[in-house]
Amino acid sequence: MSTILSRHVPSQLYVYIELIRLEKPTGVILAFWPFAWGIFLASSDHCMTPAMGTSWLVMFFSGSFLLRSTACTWNDILDRKFDRLVERTKDRPIASGKLAVFNAAVFLSIEVALCILFFAFLRNSKAFWLGMFSLFPLVSLYPLLKRYTYWPQAWLGVTANWGLLIAYLTLTDVFDYRRLLPLLTGAWWSVILLIADTIYACQDKNDDAQAGVKSTALKFGNWAKPILLSFIGGFVLSLIFVGILEGHTWRFYATSTGSVAAHLVWQLWIVDLNKSPSCAAIFRQNSYTGFLVLAGFILDYQKHSSC
Image (cartoon, rainbow, N blue to C red; front, side, top):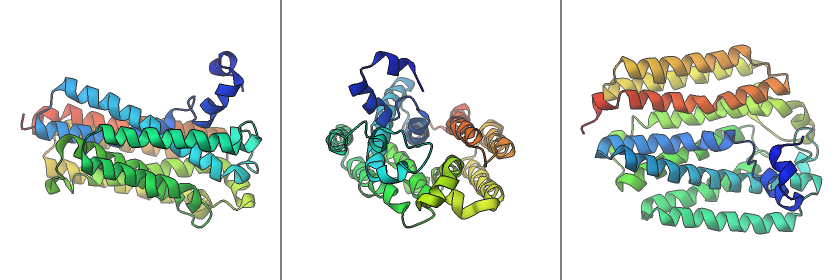
C-alpha cells in the first residue's frame, strides 16, 4: 500500500521505516502510557511543576519509541520464516527479502546502543538496571515465547508495563512501598495489553495455526470474548481499589473507571474476532484506554496531592 512516506523516501531507507512500524504508532502509544502514569505518580508525590512533568513526558515518549522500534526489529529477525507464512506479515522487509538479515542485525545493534544510552541518560542507577532488564530478557524473549507457549501476549503486557517503574524511580530514586498497591493499576495494564494483543493476534489466527505460532487468540478460541471480558472486570476492580486507597473523588471514578470500562466493553461488543480489519481497527482503539486512566488521575490531582 502506497503511503506519503513511501512516495517521498528512497526505497533503501523506507525499508527501515517499515521495519520499525513508523507509520503504525499504536504500539508506541501503548508502551508510553505506563511511563506517563509513573511520571504522574512521582509528580503528585514530589510536587513537581507541570513544566517538569511535560519535559519528562517528551523524554519517555522518545524512550517508548526507541524500545518499540528495537522490539520490532528483533521480532522480525527471529520471526522471518513465520512471517512468510502469514498473509498480513509476508511483505515485511525481512520476510519479503527487501532487507537482508545482516543489515537488519546491524540496525538492531544501533537501536540497542541507543536504548542503553537512553537509560544511561536518566542518570539513575536503579532506573538504568530496570531499563536493561526490559531489554534483556523482557523484550528479547517475547518472539521466542510464541514457539513454546500460548501466552506470549501476557509477557508482552508485563514488558510494556515495566515503564511505570522506570519512570517512577527516575524521578524519585526511591521505591515507595506505600505505592505498591496503587501500582496494581499498572499491573492490570499488562492485562489490558494482553486483551489488546489477543484481539490483534486474531487477525492471523488461521495462518498462525498452520505456521505453528502460538497465541492467546488460539488458546481462547471461541471463548475469547467471555475470557477477555473477565480480564476487563479485573482491571476495573483494580482501578476502584486504587481509588479507595488514594481517596479519589467522583472525577476519578467517572473518568478512569467508568469511561475505561465502557470503552473496553464497547470494543468487545463490536469487534468481529473472525475478521482481520475489525480486529485491527479495535486494536488501535486501545491507544485511548491509557489516556482515560491518566485523565482521571490528572482531574483528581488537586484533591489528593500534598502540594
